Image 1 (cartoon, rainbow, N blue to C red):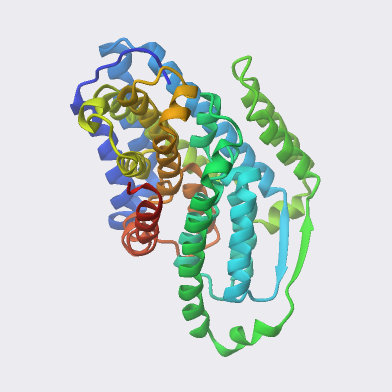
Image 2: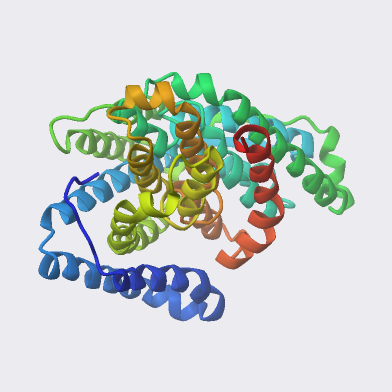
Length: 422
């Protein structure tokens, strides 16, 4: 995070609010118009904010830092998207609710070793295929909840906020040691909810689909050499010097994967770059326009958090911000706020005296990242892949109203009551 002291005019948060509003409402109210003009809206609002920072505030270092973060984000998301497109998991047989629960559980485990982005991009296509006769909105929403977010809460590899904490000095295994009861509770609650919803959906399926319950499922894996490219990308995550070496390694691995993968695998996955292009354009606008919101938070968080705030304040605060911002900068914002309110001089002092508050920031950022499509990078990627395969996915408001509020929010309340209420 930039060490420049930036004090933007609060009115400059408006472009960010307008972009969020457009992303939420335009696909619902003017879908054809949005599909043609979303790039102009996103990049246009981003240019307004960039112009303000470069010409008005003369904060070129802040803009460069944001650009670097964006390039790193797109390099990671894009390379994992390309490599996962070269791996085909062929599934035969219709998945039962129990089989789906087992699949999501292993997806949650895999997220800690492949990252939520890697696990989501690798598993979303077989997830759609194994439920192809009855796949609907709840399959996409719970996949985002469990595999693309909550599941990756045990290691710094799992989710970007935890990796940022690792770069700030949080020990690699500190998260797993302290988070595993919270992880198990959150994943367990979501899996139980999903089983109930999916059992109802399965019972309403046509008789010929339900008759597949006793049919054996068969799995075939093609493109496994791409696992080496995946390992290169995940290893590159830990390369910090020189600047952009990490991103170069990721891009080279993706290019090698793309040109060495058989075209038949790409065809079987319906692979093309349209979902990646959409994500790159929309997040360019998000990264640019959210700078005033983050800088305002950095300047004012200490004042409105008060003295010695309870862990719940950090859990809900970091979480709520993660739902409307990308969760990685939200984590950094509240980590800075935690340093400001605690008076800790370094990460070691923070871990010794305010570990529960740091845990609340970490869990809040990761878990609440599932609240909207923009809370975490892979959320929008999952939606884009599902849309490309003609799956009925929830709109932005539907996702919040039909899934976040009735399912994710009760789980978050339970986590707060059990672990952070004190």
